[in-house]
Figure (cartoon, rainbow, N blue to C red):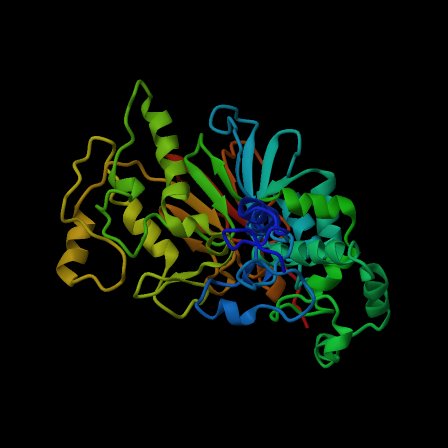
Length: 451
């Protein structure tokens, strides 16, 4: 090989040219990887859509030919499709002909739902009807319930069972858009497999994966496959939370935390321990701002899993879907709301709440101190095992209709004469104090027994 006087290869290109040639593919590769990473990180990992986050989540990732992100985790489209918040305005306090009606978990019990609407004399032109989620699954007529709600565009919040159906439909639509997916899905449907039969299939037959806790052929799967596009769009548009600012009330399926229970209540990021800055705002505007900060400044309330599944708070301040651990979240909610003393209340530097492991003297101190806030009410479903759970600042309306018990509604602003038909049955009609100084009433109907 010929070399120059300095010992370099005269036939070789200059060193700078080599660097440029080597760098060009590297730059392109980095650019492509960056774009892919940006796209993937905007998607939910399908294994974490419904499960409470745990350290074991990574072990639940699926085995298949799905794409992977830079960490090796398999990535999927956003089957969760969460819409967090909807604001519903209403003049239920001023107009005696208008009412707000909130209804507990329907669970596909279409006939009981119809009976309850008749019982309360529901008038779509005058009443605002809000359901509290879990409108489908378990009961026999989920599609009929979806049809009525979607055709009348009745608003409500998303429940955990609604979420399962929504995710299954999103998965089905995604699969059928993949190469070979439509044919694979149609063939699998024709086999009419039970969850156990699908689970026993060989790996080669499970070409398109889904989370291990999903069940092919389950009730949620069946509803998702059979429901119409109108039904699907209706579920997709259901928010996790509805805010009723004129009543200073939230509607949610499972629950909302008033504080981060892992931190002292006086900690600067706890929204109810700090009054909003006035800045020419009225007290009512300040209340609305502080209410919304409960959703944005408490990290657990930022997680859809909390809003869809929470039932209790453990001794260590963790959110749980179980009913036999810790305390009901509603107990903590009411304890904190009872501390609200208006925006002029002085905050105590030693005032603590949450965690479940407070010394008794601190817990007693908590009950006496006032916070710079006004109380907020939460109406929810989800906890059928606790039945009708009426407290000062929270109302749980899931009374187990799908289990053969009752379907319950709460009427706010009900001043119509003879608006409730009490002749058919002897249901208890319970009056309660709602919000700041409003009366509401509880109406229910008996649901048929399930066999």
